[in-house]
Image (cartoon, rainbow, N blue to C red; front, side, top):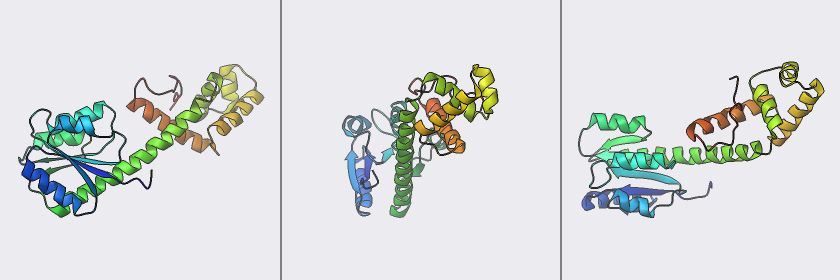
Length: 222
């Protein structure tokens, strides 16, 4: 993934502006794919591709902000940069609230555009690394038995082994063995690391309701 080359997707219905944006990005040596509409872009782009989206706000069909929301609804992490020839503060605020990297006014300079694109690509690269790490943690978590998950929930909540033993009505030695097994299965070398993993799992669960493999009590007590 680290060697993957980013692509900047440009969605702009004005051909002259689209060509200008393509030229500015291409001058930086980055691959560019351009589209005349949001619908054309949605039909063609690879949702797993590293990069960012630069989209006009006011277009026929889906607008730039509607396109941004569509990607968000589909769980696509591609960073979005919106551009507009109008000073539309409410639209800019709304776009930023739902995750747009930036809102630029036309005409923007090459330096301004490239600085924003560089930030967006770096953000996407980091997000993809975190997504991969969470996917690995979730895979480890699925290997835990229900009993081990119950113990893990209490461990990351800060409960002592003897308290866990009393609550789950099991021997102290059993809890200690379960704890060792949990750490091994989760590839965690400490309780602190297990807590960090649990936090990431909780964040994933909140962002993907109904998708997470976490049981309801996996983050209990925090």
